[in-house]
Amino acid sequence: MDYKGVIFDFNGTLFWDSEKHLEAWREFSKRLREHAFTDDEMREYMFGRTNEDIIAYLIGKKPSKEMVEKFAKEKEGVYREMCRKDPEHFHLAPYAVEFLNYLKENNIPRTIATMSEKDNVDFYIKEFNLANWFDLDKIVYSDGTIAGKPAPDIYQIAAKNLGLAPQECIVVEDAVSGIEAARRANIGKIVAIASMEPVELYEKIPAVSMIIKDFKEIQAIMAKGVAAK
Image (cartoon, rainbow, N blue to C red; front, side, top):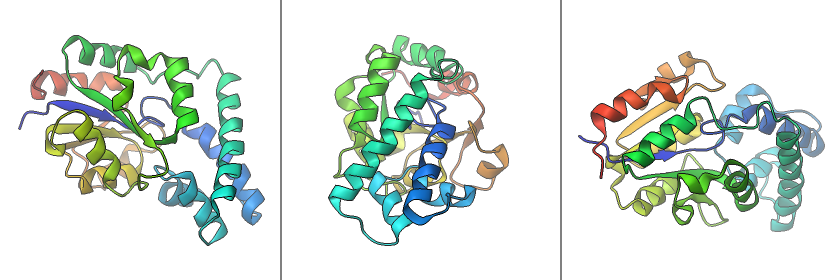
Protein backbone atom coordinates (compact mmCIF):
# COMPACT_ATOMS: atom_id res chain seq x y z
CA MET A 1 0.00 0.00 0.00
CA ASP A 2 1.14 3.53 -0.73
CA TYR A 3 0.74 5.94 2.16
CA LYS A 4 -0.56 9.24 0.91
CA GLY A 5 -0.62 11.48 3.99
CA VAL A 6 0.88 12.08 7.40
CA ILE A 7 -0.94 12.91 10.64
CA PHE A 8 1.14 14.18 13.55
CA ASP A 9 0.31 14.15 17.19
CA PHE A 10 1.88 17.34 18.54
CA ASN A 11 2.98 17.26 22.17
CA GLY A 12 5.92 14.92 22.62
CA THR A 13 6.04 14.45 18.85
CA LEU A 14 6.53 17.65 16.86
CA PHE A 15 7.26 19.53 20.08
CA TRP A 16 9.13 17.73 22.85
CA ASP A 17 7.41 19.30 25.81
CA SER A 18 6.38 16.24 27.78
CA GLU A 19 8.49 17.14 30.82
CA LYS A 20 6.79 20.53 31.11
CA HIS A 21 3.34 18.96 30.96
CA LEU A 22 4.42 16.38 33.53
CA GLU A 23 5.66 19.04 35.91
CA ALA A 24 2.48 21.12 35.56
CA TRP A 25 0.16 18.13 36.03
CA ARG A 26 2.16 16.80 38.97
CA GLU A 27 1.55 20.10 40.72
CA PHE A 28 -2.17 19.95 40.02
CA SER A 29 -2.29 16.32 41.09
CA LYS A 30 -0.99 17.40 44.50
CA ARG A 31 -3.65 20.08 44.73
CA LEU A 32 -6.49 17.72 43.87
CA ARG A 33 -5.53 14.56 45.77
CA GLU A 34 -2.44 15.45 47.88
CA HIS A 35 0.10 13.40 45.93
CA ALA A 36 1.69 13.61 42.50
CA PHE A 37 1.07 11.49 39.43
CA THR A 38 3.31 8.43 39.18
CA ASP A 39 5.09 7.74 35.89
CA ASP A 40 2.81 4.75 35.20
CA GLU A 41 -0.28 6.86 35.85
CA MET A 42 1.03 9.47 33.44
CA ARG A 43 1.33 6.93 30.63
CA GLU A 44 -2.07 5.40 31.31
CA TYR A 45 -4.26 8.34 32.30
CA MET A 46 -2.62 11.59 31.10
CA PHE A 47 -0.84 11.27 27.75
CA GLY A 48 -3.28 11.85 24.89
CA ARG A 49 -6.23 12.49 27.22
CA THR A 50 -8.45 15.53 27.50
CA ASN A 51 -8.20 17.82 30.52
CA GLU A 52 -11.63 16.55 31.59
CA ASP A 53 -10.41 12.94 31.44
CA ILE A 54 -7.34 13.76 33.54
CA ILE A 55 -9.23 15.73 36.18
CA ALA A 56 -11.91 13.01 36.39
CA TYR A 57 -9.21 10.44 37.09
CA LEU A 58 -7.61 12.61 39.76
CA ILE A 59 -10.82 13.31 41.68
CA GLY A 60 -12.44 9.93 41.05
CA LYS A 61 -15.65 11.27 39.51
CA LYS A 62 -16.92 13.31 36.61
CA PRO A 63 -15.93 16.95 37.21
CA SER A 64 -18.20 19.90 36.64
CA LYS A 65 -17.63 21.97 33.53
CA GLU A 66 -16.62 24.90 35.72
CA MET A 67 -14.00 22.81 37.53
CA VAL A 68 -12.50 21.58 34.27
CA GLU A 69 -12.28 25.09 32.85
CA LYS A 70 -10.74 26.52 36.02
CA PHE A 71 -8.04 23.91 36.53
CA ALA A 72 -7.29 23.55 32.81
CA LYS A 73 -6.75 27.27 32.35
CA GLU A 74 -4.52 27.46 35.41
CA LYS A 75 -2.46 24.46 34.40
CA GLU A 76 -2.09 25.47 30.74
CA GLY A 77 -1.14 29.02 31.72
CA VAL A 78 1.64 27.66 33.93
CA TYR A 79 2.74 25.35 31.11
CA ARG A 80 2.92 28.14 28.49
CA GLU A 81 4.90 30.35 30.84
CA MET A 82 7.34 27.47 31.42
CA CYS A 83 7.80 27.19 27.65
CA ARG A 84 8.51 30.89 27.25
CA LYS A 85 11.06 30.85 30.08
CA ASP A 86 13.01 27.99 28.48
CA PRO A 87 14.08 29.30 25.04
CA GLU A 88 16.81 26.68 24.75
CA HIS A 89 14.16 23.96 24.42
CA PHE A 90 11.31 26.01 22.97
CA HIS A 91 11.54 24.84 19.36
CA LEU A 92 10.22 22.07 17.16
CA ALA A 93 11.66 18.57 17.55
CA PRO A 94 15.02 17.60 16.01
CA TYR A 95 14.78 17.48 12.18
CA ALA A 96 11.05 18.30 12.31
CA VAL A 97 11.49 21.46 10.22
CA GLU A 98 13.47 19.54 7.59
CA PHE A 99 10.85 16.81 7.45
CA LEU A 100 7.95 19.27 7.26
CA ASN A 101 9.74 21.10 4.44
CA TYR A 102 10.13 17.77 2.63
CA LEU A 103 6.41 17.04 2.93
CA LYS A 104 5.52 20.55 1.76
CA GLU A 105 7.90 20.46 -1.21
CA ASN A 106 6.48 17.11 -2.32
CA ASN A 107 2.84 18.15 -1.81
CA ILE A 108 2.22 15.32 0.65
CA PRO A 109 -0.98 15.94 2.64
CA ARG A 110 -0.35 16.49 6.34
CA THR A 111 -2.10 17.71 9.46
CA ILE A 112 -1.97 17.70 13.23
CA ALA A 113 -4.31 15.77 15.56
CA THR A 114 -3.78 16.85 19.15
CA MET A 115 -5.75 16.64 22.36
CA SER A 116 -4.44 20.08 23.29
CA GLU A 117 -7.13 22.72 23.61
CA LYS A 118 -7.54 25.85 21.50
CA ASP A 119 -5.50 28.23 23.68
CA ASN A 120 -2.46 25.98 23.42
CA VAL A 121 -2.99 25.26 19.72
CA ASP A 122 -3.16 28.99 19.00
CA PHE A 123 0.02 29.40 21.06
CA TYR A 124 1.83 26.75 18.98
CA ILE A 125 0.58 28.16 15.68
CA LYS A 126 1.93 31.59 16.55
CA GLU A 127 5.22 30.62 18.21
CA PHE A 128 6.22 27.91 15.70
CA ASN A 129 4.73 29.51 12.57
CA LEU A 130 2.80 26.32 11.84
CA ALA A 131 0.88 28.01 9.02
CA ASN A 132 4.08 27.63 7.00
CA TRP A 133 3.43 23.87 6.76
CA PHE A 134 -0.17 23.22 7.73
CA ASP A 135 -3.63 24.24 6.58
CA LEU A 136 -4.86 25.57 9.92
CA ASP A 137 -8.47 24.65 9.14
CA LYS A 138 -7.48 20.98 8.94
CA ILE A 139 -5.80 20.80 12.36
CA VAL A 140 -7.86 18.73 14.82
CA TYR A 141 -7.77 19.66 18.51
CA SER A 142 -9.80 19.13 21.65
CA ASP A 143 -12.89 21.33 21.29
CA GLY A 144 -15.07 19.64 23.88
CA THR A 145 -16.80 17.38 21.37
CA ILE A 146 -14.04 14.88 20.51
CA ALA A 147 -13.44 11.85 22.72
CA GLY A 148 -9.93 11.66 24.15
CA LYS A 149 -7.42 9.08 23.01
CA PRO A 150 -7.47 6.05 22.95
CA ALA A 151 -10.82 6.63 21.22
CA PRO A 152 -10.20 6.65 17.45
CA ASP A 153 -12.27 9.75 16.68
CA ILE A 154 -9.48 12.31 16.40
CA TYR A 155 -7.54 10.30 13.83
CA GLN A 156 -10.64 9.46 11.85
CA ILE A 157 -11.47 13.17 11.66
CA ALA A 158 -7.90 14.08 10.72
CA ALA A 159 -7.83 11.57 7.86
CA LYS A 160 -11.17 12.87 6.61
CA ASN A 161 -9.82 16.44 6.73
CA LEU A 162 -7.02 15.32 4.41
CA GLY A 163 -9.51 13.67 2.07
CA LEU A 164 -7.96 10.28 2.73
CA ALA A 165 -9.01 6.95 4.18
CA PRO A 166 -7.34 6.16 7.53
CA GLN A 167 -5.58 3.22 5.86
CA GLU A 168 -3.83 5.67 3.51
CA CYS A 169 -2.28 7.63 6.38
CA ILE A 170 0.80 7.43 8.53
CA VAL A 171 0.39 8.59 12.13
CA VAL A 172 3.38 9.74 14.19
CA GLU A 173 2.76 9.34 17.94
CA ASP A 174 4.62 9.18 21.22
CA ALA A 175 1.80 8.27 23.64
CA VAL A 176 0.58 4.73 24.24
CA SER A 177 -3.02 5.99 24.28
CA GLY A 178 -2.42 7.78 20.98
CA ILE A 179 -0.99 4.67 19.38
CA GLU A 180 -4.08 2.76 20.47
CA ALA A 181 -6.29 5.53 19.06
CA ALA A 182 -4.52 5.24 15.71
CA ARG A 183 -4.88 1.46 15.76
CA ARG A 184 -8.61 1.69 16.48
CA ALA A 185 -8.94 4.22 13.66
CA ASN A 186 -7.41 1.65 11.25
CA ILE A 187 -4.47 3.91 10.40
CA GLY A 188 -2.25 2.30 7.77
CA LYS A 189 1.13 2.79 9.47
CA ILE A 190 1.87 3.88 13.02
CA VAL A 191 5.29 5.39 13.70
CA ALA A 192 6.31 5.78 17.35
CA ILE A 193 8.80 8.52 18.18
CA ALA A 194 10.81 7.84 21.32
CA SER A 195 11.09 11.45 22.47
CA MET A 196 10.88 10.64 26.18
CA GLU A 197 10.00 6.97 26.58
CA PRO A 198 12.53 4.18 25.93
CA VAL A 199 12.44 2.39 22.58
CA GLU A 200 11.71 -0.84 24.47
CA LEU A 201 8.26 0.45 25.45
CA TYR A 202 7.19 0.67 21.81
CA GLU A 203 8.78 -2.64 20.85
CA LYS A 204 6.14 -4.32 22.99
CA ILE A 205 3.23 -2.74 21.07
CA PRO A 206 2.21 -4.83 18.02
CA ALA A 207 0.44 -1.91 16.31
CA VAL A 208 3.70 0.06 15.97
CA SER A 209 5.22 -0.36 12.51
CA MET A 210 8.36 1.69 13.06
CA ILE A 211 10.19 3.34 15.95
CA ILE A 212 12.23 6.51 15.42
CA LYS A 213 14.28 8.76 17.67
CA ASP A 214 13.96 11.86 15.48
CA PHE A 215 12.38 12.89 12.19
CA LYS A 216 15.51 12.32 10.14
CA GLU A 217 14.78 8.61 10.31
CA ILE A 218 11.31 8.79 8.80
CA GLN A 219 12.12 10.65 5.58
CA ALA A 220 13.64 7.54 4.00
CA ILE A 221 10.43 5.54 4.36
CA MET A 222 8.40 8.45 3.03
CA ALA A 223 10.59 8.63 -0.07
CA LYS A 224 9.94 4.93 -0.69
CA GLY A 225 6.40 4.46 0.56
CA VAL A 226 4.39 7.64 0.31
CA ALA A 227 2.77 8.53 -2.97
CA ALA A 228 2.88 12.27 -3.50
CA LYS A 229 -0.52 13.59 -4.35
